[in-house]
Length: 330
Ligand SMILES: Cc1cc2nc3c(=O)[nH]c(=O)nc-3n(C[C@H](O)[C@H](O)[C@H](O)COP(=O)(O)OP(=O)(O)OC[C@H]3O[C@@H](n4cnc5c(N)ncnc54)[C@H](O)[C@@H]3O)c2cc1C
Image (spheres, rainbow, N blue to C red):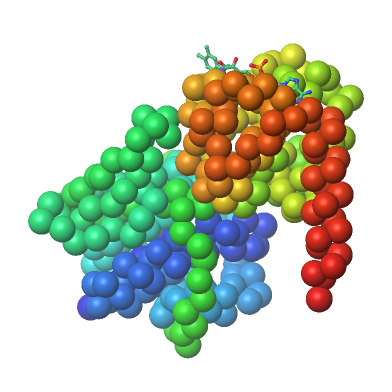
C-alpha cells in the first residue's frame, strides 16, 4: 500500500504554518486518491507534541527519520532521506511546503527519486487527462498557469498562503525509519542562524502585510506603518527605493527583485504601484491602497482604495481598528 507523503518541516521544534498548509493539501490529495496521508519528520529528535499535531491536521502516520546529523538543516542530507523514504515505501505522491528549505530540497529529491516536480503550486493536484494538474502563479503574478505531469512518482511544492490550514483529526501511528546520511551529504549544512527580526511575523508567512513606500517621506515616519501593523498583527514591508536608500532593511523589500508574497490582506501606504512592485504582491487576496494621488496606478489593482494623505488616514485607521478590536474583544 502506498500513501501521499508530506514533509513536515520543523523550525525550532515547531511546525510552522506552511507545513500545516501542506498537510491540509496532502490530506485532500490523499482523500481524492483513496490513500492514507503520511507525514515525515527529519530531525535529531521528536519535539513533544509534534506527532499529535500532525494527526490533528490529517496525518494517519508519522515516519520519523532521526539522526544526530539532522540537528541542523542540510539540503542534500534531507533530500537523500526523503528519497530513501519514497523509494523504500513505494511512495508515488509527495508534497513539500515551498519554504526556503523546501525549495532547496525539492529539485534534488526529484532527481534522486526519479520523480516529476511541480513547483510552487497553489491548488491540490487534480487527476486530469494530462495526468495530475495544478495551478500556479506565473509571469511575476501577472498570470496563472496550469502545470501537469503524468509521470510518477510526482513531487509538488505548495506555495505559502495558498491553502488555509484545516484540522482533520486522526489517531496517528508512529514509525521509525532508520537512515544515516553520508559525510558527503552533510558537508553543506546550516551552522548558525542569526535572527534579524525575532519579534515579528516573517513576511512570507504573514496573513496581513502593511507596506510603506516613498510617499512616507523618511524613516522617521515609519511609526504609523508599524502602529497599523501592530493592531492588525501584521508583518511590515516596503517598496524597493525605500530599502535602497536605507529607510528600511532590505529583507522587507517586496516586488519583482524582492520577496514575493501573497497574504490575505496587503495594505500599501504611499506606494505608487509600479509594475515591478505589483509583481511581488498582486496575488494578495485583498489589496488596500492608501495614496494621495487618485491617479496612482496602484488603485487599478486595489480591492479598496483610500485617496488621502497617509499622515492623516493611517493614524485614524489604526485608531478605528483598535477601537473596533476593543469593542469586539469578547
Ligand atoms: C528592474 C527593476 C526592478 C524593480 N524591482 C522593484 C521591486 O522589486 N519592488 C519595488 O517596489 N520596486 C521595484 N522597482 C522600482 C519601481 O519601478 C518603482 O520605482 C518603485 O516601486 C516606486 O516605489 P514607491 O512606490 O515607494 O515610490 P514612488 O513611485 O515615488 O511613489 C510614491 C507614492 O506615494 C504617494 N504619496 C506621496 N505622498 C503621499 C502622502 N502624503 N500620502 C499618501 N501617498 C503619498 C505618491 O502619490 C506616489 O504614488 C524596480 C525597478 C526596476 C527597473
